[in-house]
Amino acid sequence: MNIIIFGPPGAGKGTQAKYIVKKLKSFQVSTGDMLREEIKKDTDIGKKIINNMNDGKFVDDEIVNKLLEKIIFDEKKMNKLIFDGYPRTLKQAKNLEKLLNKSNQKIDRIFFLNVKKDDIIKRIEKRKFLEKRTDDDANTILKRYDTYMDVTKPVLDYYSKNKNFHEIDGSMEIKNISQKIEEILNF
Ligand code: AMP
Image 1 (cartoon, helix red, strand yellow):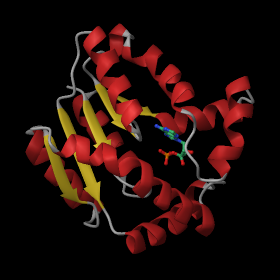
Image 2 (cartoon, rainbow, N blue to C red):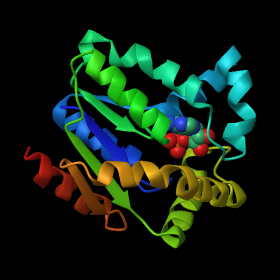
Image 3 (tube, protein in one colour):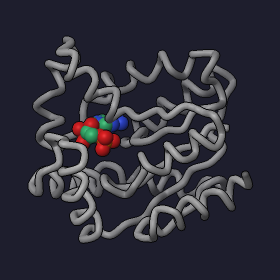
């Protein structure tokens, strides 16, 4: 089963992705983690993306799409992909569909974790201390939220028409969100 977890920054996508990964013995595909790894290793990609990442701006579709390709065609991971933070633009959504088609896979479920801006700001401020992320200060948070609203909203409109789309109230307690997901996935 391939699943997309969708929602604004700080909605709890990573937490729920990890939960599903454990339950379904699948693989988390976090483009944010992959990009942070490139920066940590100071690769060519890392050097290109560091400013955008720290400014709360999106990384170019071409770079993110390229990182994703390897994973989609990895036979060990096929039909066990939990997408966390991808796709974020319509171009990425179309690219994902193309790559999945090419590898005889599909998207089985889309979860949208819906959380209001105020709740997100509070959550990210808390996470900043726990995870020591350099892109988590208040200004960056606001920028990331606005970017999300501008660029990701069309992706949400696109997916909300899909019969496998499920909207979940992301302001609920973590365990209640997990429970909702569990009910829908029936595991
Ligand atoms: P995340 O860990 O998913 O919150 O992502 C952290 C940052 O990584 C974002 O603010 C973007 O700068 C970048 N990023 C992660 N995933 C993507 C993506 N799919 N497209 C563009 N930029 C991304």
